[in-house]
Amino acid sequence: MSQFNNVTVDKAANVYFDGKCVSHTIHLPDGSRKSVGVILPATLTFNTGAPEVMEGVAGECRVRLKGETAWSTYGAGQSFEVPGHSSLDIEVAPGGAYHYVCHFG
Image 1 (tube, rainbow, N blue to C red):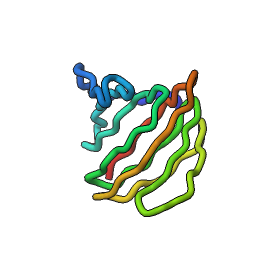
Image 2: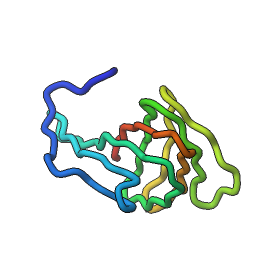
Image 3: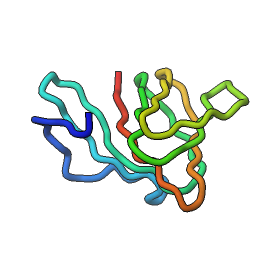
Image 4: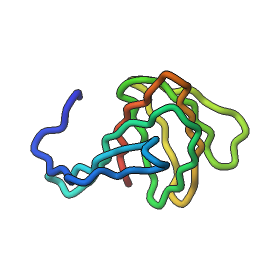
């Protein structure tokens, strides 16, 4: 799916890490929410409250989940799961940008 239909979008952006990650929250008719955003070149650590599924839309990133030593690479059309009450390190290489949809819950 290349778009979400019949959604409400929060006008204010979610800006993290001095602008290295910017997203907008969308609310779907069924009451669920997602965020749609981009991560610019950086190595960042995110903490999670609820479980998340990160869906790659464009670009590429490397990810290391809490408790793991190995990094995994994900690109467009791939997704990965992050447990709730956890964290992940995510890295986007210089010159790149990772576009994503974050599915909560």
